[in-house]
Amino acid sequence: MSNQTRPYALSIAGFDPSGGAGVLADIKTMEAMGVYGMGVVTALTYQNDVDFAGVDWAPLEQIMRQVDVLLQRFAIRYIKIGIVKDWETLMALLAFLHNRIDNPVIVYDPVLKASAGFKFHDTTSWQLTKLMQAISCLTPNLPEAALLFGQDALNNLQPYAGYAAIYLKGGHGDGMQIIDRLITSNGETTFVNNKIQLGEKHGSGCVLSSAIAAGLALGNNIQLAAKQANSYMQVFLKSNETLLGYHQMWGQ
Image (cartoon, rainbow, N blue to C red):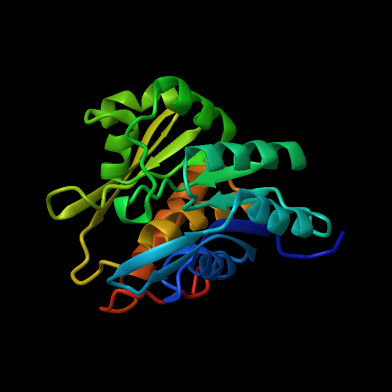
């Protein structure tokens, strides 16, 4: 095993050539948070900050081989998962990680864009329970939560939070404030921020979920990791007026 003063965190996500989303954005975030970030590619996407032109999916075997060679040398426990091809690939990947890593801490960002070909509309409560039992934190936005948990998602989340924390991103809500919610078995914590003019950023969901994973890798509990990730996001969203945000070292 290699010795490292920084904790490791692994992003298993798609490759976005613009660097705004996916594994590149995740590693930028992890590094800025003080964690050594590593990356495994699940898909080669053809996109920039405004257009998604297509995707070539990495087979499950290739994803697992990428992970396996890292685990031969590095003690990785904290993992963020982004886009994967389908439900079967996701669940097989989670089973593989639990088989290879002792008590992995997994943050799953459910990228459910129709353009990417990943549809969750036919999931059942049993499937969702199985998913939640295999992860530590789920980070859906409001439309993704509606696809996963139904249109009344906000009232349907608490039973599932008994298995894993849910960080519900409120950026798609109405009004001049954005209300994010962290829902755990111990209750709900809200993070309220004013909407930022020209603050929309490509890949903001990737940044938020990887910031939570980094916070957990640093030894924080989920409440503190979520709070720090929310604060990191405010600096990131304000960093410039384009769709590609800038990362800076946490606390600077």
